[in-house]
Image 1 (spheres, rainbow, N blue to C red):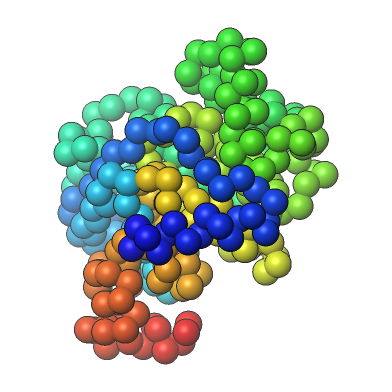
Image 2: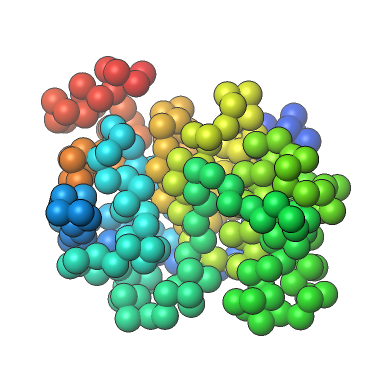
Length: 266
């Protein structure tokens, strides 16, 4: 699978972006163990187990409302689980300061959530200044480095409104990377984009996977899940129904529910 990921790098040359997306970066494993969560009286997660080794990519697929996005929010402690545990490199992080934890776990959402009154560069530099304690100049240097990573260094002084949706999502990814995370969570990062903008963002995510970033990706892009993932999880009604290699999930589904889902999306 690692060789297949490497093929994605050369594709970026047609997208006008550099091939190496991450540089040297420390990656860690992430585990969610027997996670349960009830929201508004409704069980949203019902005993979900997930593990991704350092430097590997797991995609999470399933119908809307199956708990996929909530799972990411629990792993990043935007929601606290009712029970279960979250571990980085085998060590529980439920007792860790949430702001500190979110420096270790980067997250990219469906919507970009950029500050419209700030330049692209200042949007990215804000986190390193406020949370990592970097000076203004050091934070801006980090921000520019990450803009170069996502191929937008020339747009550093631009306001978000003057960028396309795909460019804004790249800025959101650069903002997360500027915190030097040990792993990244992507919550349907392309779902709010026009179809012609999806390719560039997926290519950047492929670069990150090829560069050894630990990633959990919630996605409806089945081609990405098949070609980039080391493992795929299928969720339904708050439960993990089936998991395995992309080949096993897409070509040899074991459960009727997964087979039904794939028949509707492929």
